[in-house]
Amino acid sequence: MEIKSTPQLMKGLFKVKDKYYLSPHLIRIVLESDAIQNFKNARLGDNNKILLPQYAGAAVELPSPTRGLKEITNYIRTYTLRALAVEANEMTIDFVAHGTEGPASSWAIQCDKGDAIGVLMKEKEKGLIETASNYILIGDHTALPVISVLLEQMSNTASGHVILEVYGPEDVLELHRPAKMNLHWIFNKTPGINSQLSKMLENIGIEHPNETFVFAATEQKTNQEIQEFLRSQPIQRTQWNAFSYWKQGVSER
View 1 (cartoon, rainbow, N blue to C red):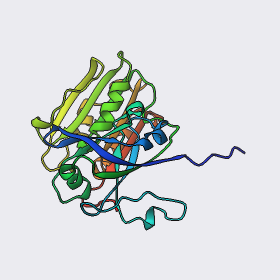
View 2: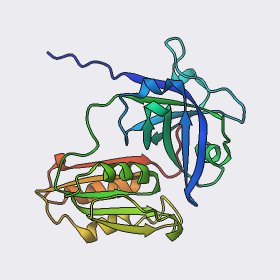
View 3: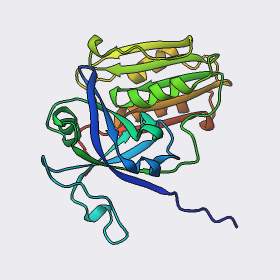
């Protein structure tokens, strides 16, 4: 019997090197640290856990053999590895800016150069999507970073549809993508409420069921709607991944 090894935990303390707005509701933060070498096997688009201070100037603590995540008092949130430059000691994470009530959005809006943050990642063997000639990618604002990565990594010959829901026209970005990947923007100023992502997917449909892979990353209720639709289509379960990136009214620790 094959014994699976425990995924390697990559971890490090970082400091803010640069910060700028990609749009009114999306902040790009470039982090730097000598610990970047710990992340040399990290894969763009995969999730990471960020550890945030509970208040300005508070310490950020990484888990250790004697003190696990449950004992650490930092806020913990899940984000996407947007870019990695090991030679330059840089890691990039994009944050949705939705006010100062949530700790991650508040930190991203208010942080300054030199502010501390912790990052944890696990090495993963399985990719987010399978190789296909046709794709349908669906996501709200929180999925914009991972979908951007997937588009950048696709073959130039790939075709299909990208459905993205953001706050408004001011948040539309120029995305690098194959010419035959059709881009559809939906605007919703109440994220998690009245999302039209699943309805747009139903309108587009699965045009080439034997050639298509579907990737979705949305709020939990929308994720359920998307999964229900996909199960009703002539597409195999191995041809789609649908993730709940967040749940309306519920936050991580």
